Amino acid sequence: NLTSLTFSYANISPDMLRPFIRHCHNIRVFWALDSICDEGLEAVAATCKELRELRVFPIDAREDSEGPVSGVGLQAISAGCRKLESILYFCQR
Image 1 (tube, rainbow, N blue to C red):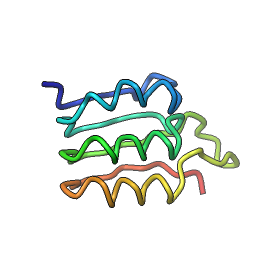
Image 2 (tube, rainbow, N blue to C red):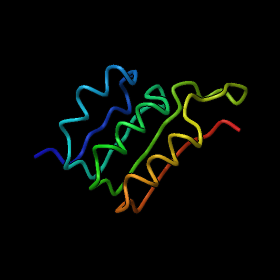
Image 3 (tube, rainbow, N blue to C red):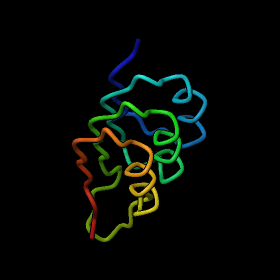
Image 4 (tube, rainbow, N blue to C red):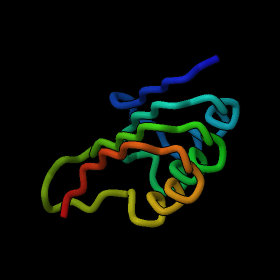
């Protein structure tokens, strides 16, 4: 059973993530680029109830760019992943 999933070097969209993540109920560690957007985090929150660690890295680290992950996605994670112990999120603001 898969417990760790890292997409920190893969530019994947929510549409690419959703069909895959829905089969990953035992994920405890998830790393991804912010290209997964809020919709991707919502899919993780709906499926990965065992999640302990989340890291979201910026796909575009320029200070003047707005990332596609917002409080909406992070709130979904906090509501859906009650065993979460650590979040590392790189915001541009």
